[in-house]
Image (cartoon, rainbow, N blue to C red; front, side, top):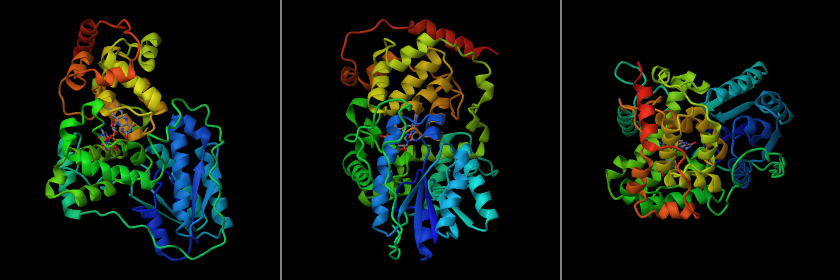
Length: 447
Ligand SMILES: Cc1cc2nc3c(=O)[nH]c(=O)nc-3n(C[C@H](O)[C@H](O)[C@H](O)COP(=O)(O)OP(=O)(O)OC[C@H]3O[C@@H](n4cnc5c(N)ncnc54)[C@H](O)[C@@H]3O)c2cc1C
């Protein structure tokens, strides 16, 4: 019997660990860990936890069709996972554990502890680079070093993709019948302390079928205009697939395969949307290759050294609540608070506003985002926040400060998005833009 451990890879198609475990034909059981205390410690948003559980339930149904029962273990923290997994493995005479890699250091350490315990008991562990199309360490420059900026990384990534042509794996063949019952997926667990909105199942229906429908709609109806429209939050021109991608209900390989299927010619590969998917890969590579980033260290410490963060709870709270008096910033924050998701342009605008104009530490904003986002993803969030604070992997030699008013004129010219989220009258701005900008630039230019 083989055991497949599901984490943020909640799908049966293009799931390398599941596929390889099933291919041995010895029977498979699946397991997932329910760890509310751990989720809280890692700033998981309430809507994210609820969405994850709903997707787990869908996965259990999909696995049932393959004669694979999904078992559940309950743990207070990651520390308990090795023993509890091992107890389950012993109970079912498991001879091999299969899982897909997660790349944050915290998860890597958790998995190492599991591998050690299983190894001591002569149970093989097999892990797969399923979440990444190109495993970390395979996209290197001519000197064999990691890329520190995105554009050459993406060029090399594309060249490797053409060379290797990675394809999604199919769902595994059904396993032999068995008598092991699946466990019910519990909803009444204590995640009440997690922050943010409740999961909205109309905006984000759970399950791989919904994710695929959304992918198909996007590539058939929105992809061609994506490069022109993706920055306009009122247009709903992006895929809004991030919640599904972040918990592996859908894979990047599946996205690329769909793109290819529905495209008339080879131009699909140059589409900006592919570039965005490569950003996702880039930030995962950085986490592995620059491990100090996992410990909230900036990619560019030499820049952060120049900046003094100003701890001001009133300003930070105004930002959190969408009450800064800058309409585009407030609209973005209210979208986040109410739906658990925010448009990419607004993530950049709100993050720039907090770090550059309110001069609050990017770590505060990054945690707040994680605590509220349904697509909260450690690598992409960290990367996005460091980029916004100019301490991350960014080719720009200058200190970019978004002007929130100018951003509204460009990307929400008729105030459609702003009016959707700001219903009542205007609030006095919490800062004067011109002087805040000057202070920030002076600080950055300090030697
Ligand atoms: C400060 C900040 C924080 C962010 N935090 C997260 C996060 O926690 N989780 C997350 O998935 N994305 C994060 N992003 C990236 C991006 O904003 C979202 O992925 C995107 O808005 C999701 O919407 P979509 O699915 O419609 O994207 P689309 O435009 O349709 O893009 C397709 C997919 O590509 C990936 N992607 C797109 N842009 C980026 C990017 N800049 N970096 C990494 N991956 C990208 C996502 O998986 C996305 O679903 C953050 C960006 C910033 C600036």
